[in-house]
View 1 (cartoon, one colour):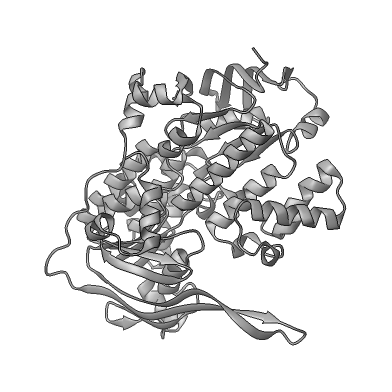
View 2 (view 1 turned 90 degrees about the vertical axis):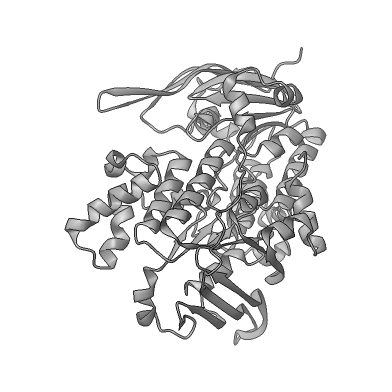
Length: 529
């Protein structure tokens, strides 16, 4: 038997706060061999990411860790900080779950990838640029030369994730910890990234710890699977054995949890809530000493559609196709041309001051709940902020927040806690409560389930159906997960390169897609079905 690249023995992680002890990880043991991908799966808050972070010793200062972690026979729980710095990013690399909070907003893409090349390989600036371009091309960034000077906020969610992957692969590590590496990617790019990791795994003998809630990808790419529940690894088995014959009851529950069902039908007499015509969002490209406009990036190009009361329109397409840009333009958070008539008012022509009264009726739940919730504000203040802005009296505000938290099935007693004290699924419920508390007529949901495991995805899908029936809002639902879209959307719009390819009844689109690109999306999404 060859020595494992990584071996974790009896790992336990404890936190002591205000005299109370919690143990989110208990007696966890696993190993990964050279050239093997081990998937660690489990519900949000089960301890997957804590286990992964412990390998790099990236736990919070108040965490107490026991047990042993061996990297190629060396116990890295006992090495010096100097030795740890040699290992991090060089022999052991990590792809973090939330790229927007992991990338430095003040540095360009080139500077952030170059940093690890300078630190661990001592490359010159010109050699580092060549390697950075190679890496960006490797992870599927189009026209990488034009992205070197981009900042994280100028990239789509999927592009930011690919930059993170490029940084992790920069020094050809022996162990790659991938914490939800395909969270922000559409289904076709998910497959491309996992194919890339598999190729590196095979050609370089790369050992990979894959943390993922996407069990379709896990089944296709991992050799073994470890199932984690409430801090304990309850079952480890070869992938096909686990999927065909799960032994532990939680494994059985996890594999059976998949978004299903259909949305509540739209009333036959529902009126049009939103009417969009020839909407365009073009960003100018400038060149030369006088910075003249030489071309445009057509992020959204001549899109028209309608949305009825209580209707959900699913918006799908690859990363960078214009999904989020379209929604932000309708909400008047980006400049646009064309028309968007909402409740009889043409939004695009309104000044910001005139838009303010309508803001209460137009809400958004962002893709990254951790990045969109202020770490300095309690849940009470976060959910109640919109009420304060719109002049709701203090005496009514807390009661409204409590009602909103109950609506999203969160304990109102947690309202005095802070975002970092919640799991990813709980943070997404908080973000939904923040939008819901104002009783809007239209909610934009931007990838609301992308960072969630399947059991929590199913809960959120059922919650959204229930909330839409109870509160009667319309919804623009942006997602790359077509199984979730199928369970929630009445109609589906397919975007690519800023253009609308088709917009049809959901059942018709899923059963008989007209466009070749739509057929490719469906083929990638429903593999093994």
